[in-house]
Length: 298
Ligand SMILES: [Zn+2]
Image 1 (cartoon, rainbow, N blue to C red):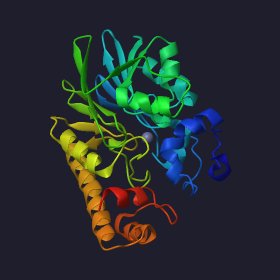
Image 2: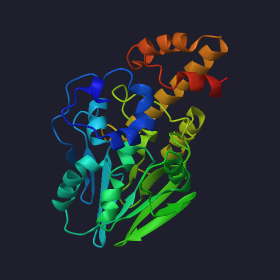
Image 3: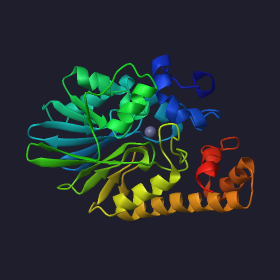
C-alpha cells in the first residue's frame, strides 16, 4: 500500500493486513489528493455525543487514521462506537480526556474491518469491554486476526450505563453482521460502513465477509425507520435524516442500474464504464464490487 500511497504516516504490515478486506478492491489505484498530515477532529453532536472524524474523509486518511468514532458520555463511563486503528490510539484517548475523566467502559465495533476495529485491542488493554456481533467476530476468526473481542451478541442487545440506553442492532449489509448503534435519548445513530461518503470512499460491500447490495438497501431502509436526528457514518460527515435518505436513494439507484445493465448482458467493464460518469464512480480501473454485484443482481 505504501508503494502507491505516498503517505507520510507509515502503515505497518499488520495493519495493512487488517485493512485488506475493505481496501483490497480499491487499492489498485492510488488515492487522490495530498497525504494526510492533520489528525482527526473532535466534533460535538450533543452535549454527551461526539464524533472523531477525519478532516477530509478521503481514502488516504482512511488508510492513515481509520474511520469515524462515536463517543457517548455517561456518569459511569464512556461508550465508543468503533476504534479507528492502533496508530491513533493516543490521539483518541487524548480527545476523550478533554471531555471526561471517566474510563472507557465499552467499545462497540460496527464491523470487523481494520479501519474500525484495529484500535480495539488497545482499548481492551485499558480495561474496556469490546463487543461485536457473532457474525463479524467469525469474520475476524476466518481472516486470522491476532486479537478477538471478548463479547458477542446476535440480533439485538442493549447496554444500560449511567442511566443511558445504548441499543445494538445486528443487520447484514456491508458484512454479514454489521451493528448499528442507536442512542434513543440522544436521537443519534452510528451505522459504520452501512453509510460512507461518496465519491471519496467508494460505495461497496465486502462480499467475502458476507455483505451484499440487496441486504445493504434493506439495512438502510431499517435504519430509516428509527427516530433519529443525526447519523454518524463510517466515513465522512455527520448526516441529517434527509441527507441519509439521499444516500439511501443513491445506493438503491446504483444497485438497480447495475441490475438493469446486467440483464442487458453488459460486461463488468461496460457496467463500470457506465457507472463512472453517471454516479461519479471511482477512478478508471476501479470496478469495485461490479463482478460480484453481477452475480448477486441477475
Ligand atoms: Zn470503513
